[in-house]
Length: 214
Image (tube, rainbow, N blue to C red; front, side, top):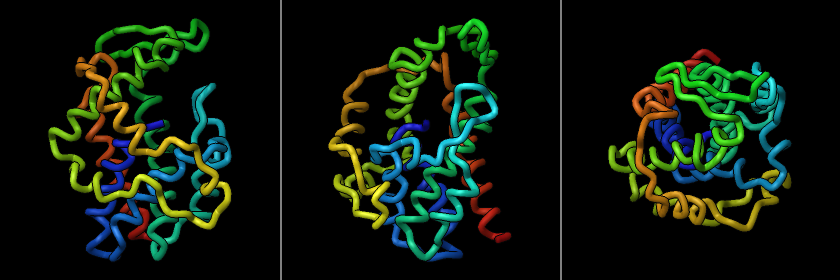
């Protein structure tokens, strides 16, 4: 559920923490972090299972780990990292940041008491628009560099796994350029940028700690 740039920021945070203990080709790792969202079969590429709140799905992380956790294969490990973020971003950030009134199909932000109907919240006028507005802040603050984005190929390498190699025609770069072209102003109504960044770092630290004790 996090957007393209969020996955790359997370990958950058993981890479910085990992590289002192495990050498890894950075561009291949970044490519792996983008691949799951390009697959046409999202249900299976994201190992979906029911989340703790009705109507949400998260990757079944143990199955993901069994199939993709391989530090010696930066593309596979990148795909694992993508799905790891999806799981913990949804369970430990998104579902805890809001009140989910399932009966009335309303979403409430307890931080500012703003409310949205579910359809609006999950639209470009809601959560996805909030992601887009924060993209500009991420670049401005240098959480990911334009130079790194330029180094990652538009057409990502094959994985050898048909599920992940059957991809939509639109590249990740085309999609990201469309987001950047939108001039959405950051308001903080939905996401607090600093809290969002803190959680990305927290989940990155959690993943590295798991690697160190495994």
